[in-house]
Amino acid sequence: MDPVRHPRELVMVDVTDATFMQDVIEKSKEVPVVVDLWAPWCGPCRQLGPIIEDVVDSHDGDVVLAKVNVDENPQVSQAFRVQGIPAVFGLRNGKVIDSFVGAQGKDAVSAFVQGLLPTAEEGEVARLLALGDIPSLRLALELDPANEEVTLALASAFVDDDRADEALELLQRIPESSASRQIAARARTGGVPDDEDGVDARLDDLLEVAGDDDAARQELIDLLEVLGPEDPRTAQYRKALTAKLF
Image (cartoon, rainbow, N blue to C red; front, side):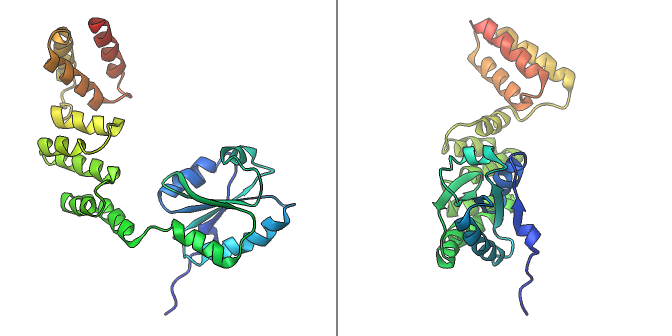
């Protein structure tokens, strides 16, 4: 039986300055995106366009083609610092990983697109990451020990499973980030209690002694990290803590 082919509209989209973030950057976090920057007056663009479309279409939705008319969308052109067209960029996970300028034959385009696709190992890591349970995430980390996304997911799963020490130990393997700080704060505090009045009282108690008590100061910082920037108490107590310390 022949494989089911995706309709062309699912693998090719005309991108504008307004839709670039959603159709290219965000989409590339799901599947690789080939960005073809072209113009109607460009002869090599008209030569290359159908070749790219056929190659991308042959991958049955595993790759998306984003067509950008540079005359109508100068911001995208500026973002890629395009100096000549056709210019083609390949993105994965929001980042450019390969590019070329000028018309190319089908073999070269096929090799370019193939190079954007995840390897079998990367695909397995993605599958295990999507499962999200601790055994799957452990396997994913064994396959790709330097993968920060998997590390964060496993550390978060450890916190949810009341294994805070393992979470904190695991987070030491990767550079600190807002995501790692939030997970570490959850591990140290056990999360924010459901009792809102209790949270406010705890914040007040910690603030009172934070100037002289390192443990209290760290707990206060952790609680604010878990509350997150959207909670108005975070900015309020951070400002109060800064005033107390300085």
